[in-house]
Image (cartoon, rainbow, N blue to C red; front, top):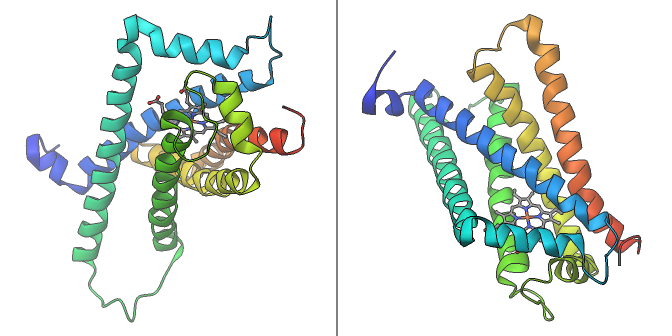
Length: 224
Ligand code: HEM
């Protein structure tokens, strides 16, 4: 095995970086979705579970918990994009034929689509931070009133539509990502393809199903 800069400069090194940071990012998305399920809990004495949860996250470890989580996520996302760009450039440099005659097979379609869906997910995250963390997309945002901000946000049809479209892009990204990650981590024998696909599909459906349910629940008036 190569070590040091050589390892990270190699294609397998970059794939391993993508796999490890991918696991961290998917882990965050799963935990975030489970936390957001508290949208469905009724208020107790006028206090929403989602607001208490937000307060808990903001005050964890005397307020440093959220910054540790933010720094880890930012590092993971940065490394993930860095490795993706590196792999793309390496693949382009190694391509023996010009773009004109290029034949798209299943694997090149998969990695092209990963780039497109990756950019959509990145755009979504920027919008999402402006919408629900910074609060400068819609009028009426109130810091700390997480339930109010989520519900009033999703009551705006274009906001809900944007979230739903972004979640579709995220689902294809996560599905192909889990599939590729398991291959990088050694589960590439044809005997395990069914298992890999099953695992990728199950996780994708759970995460995306949960996330898409939030705007739909608000739009239909189930949560208000
Ligand atoms: C419909 C689905 C989602 C809902 C309802 C939702 C809700 C929220 C809310 C309410 C916050 C602000 C929490 C607070 O200020 O206390 C937040 C923050 C955040 N969300 Fe989401 N989220 C969703 C999907 C996602 C997805 C799919 C991702 C990643 C791909 C994501 C990434 C983040 C990040 C990075 C933060 C910022 C955390 C911070 O630095 O404070 N969210 N989300």
